[in-house]
Image (tube, rainbow, N blue to C red; front, side):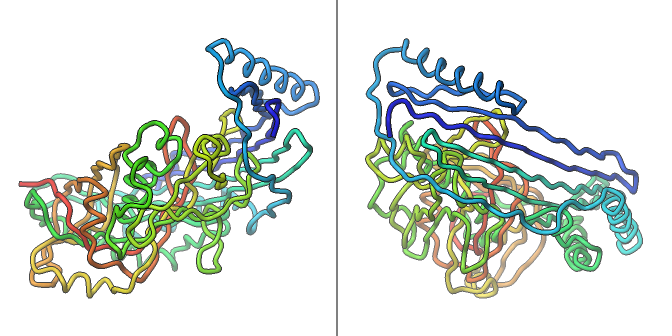
Length: 448
């Protein structure tokens, strides 16, 4: 690939968000963002430009600006131009599902869910409901004429139940459904949601009499929601090759044990066990054909996620992980569908194997850094005593080094769960999905 490489991307992003509080609609937003961008590579530097229009004149202007920006970067000093590796994907990704759900139907369904909750759950003080979907269409053209069209489509529904604790303080828990496609494809009907809401209400009632966690190191069972966040935040980001080049701790660990032999972890491109994933990427936003990346194989660190440039810098092949969120964003190395792969244990077996510890079920927010140190909020947890689930635990935190936590794993669940709600943040938001089975490990809990 020459130093005069140029690519252009036409990108449309459509989003829907409706929200309801206590049966009152307080948000009904539909937005469309579109435009064209260009990226040029010259003398070892990238230049990027974008505009919120898509016509021939604008396209030529954006291409000219991208080339000019690449040339201007050269004023910072000489840089060796890299031969950027990787082929170009050619093809069109077909749209998924049924198309948009009319707003009137969505509002009617939100009202039905609210009415059900207030009728079915005694003592409930409030409900908050929200549904969202978004659809990205990205048409990429490389300087040598290769074209590809890619899509990302996802939808999510959130129901938050609010009550009062025994001390009169407000308590709340949220249930989330997410999936590929639009709100017309996601089954968030009352019939589908009701069993999950019944379970959520029972957890909320248990939290009314919750006890504080005992701070310190404990044996824990992390439900798939927490295991998925651990994989994404604490190990996924340090395995993005730009972070590796920036000094992440993983840089010197390839080929070395970083986890229990029971742990394998991958960033999957578009399928798992013959099923299309929630965030399918067949070609990234550089046009590179996407492939699966196995970061950890039976406890050993194997490989990283790459763009063309990071692959060239490390003498490796690109993996199809260069992604841009909005029409005016340039591609960065980002995850797609990141998960710890399933093992052989059941949830019951993992709980029965703990004499004194905790079951961690739901997480709120969290953070991690390039050393793999992390801290996540825990919104729902229970004591485990004598291999049985005990009392609910007040909101707490789980923290530690992901490397040490993964090295302590002595059981991995056999049932996978996936979710695709919220965004991954790294200079720009990004649609990703996370998944995994439950894990049994040692971690640090905040508490008394």
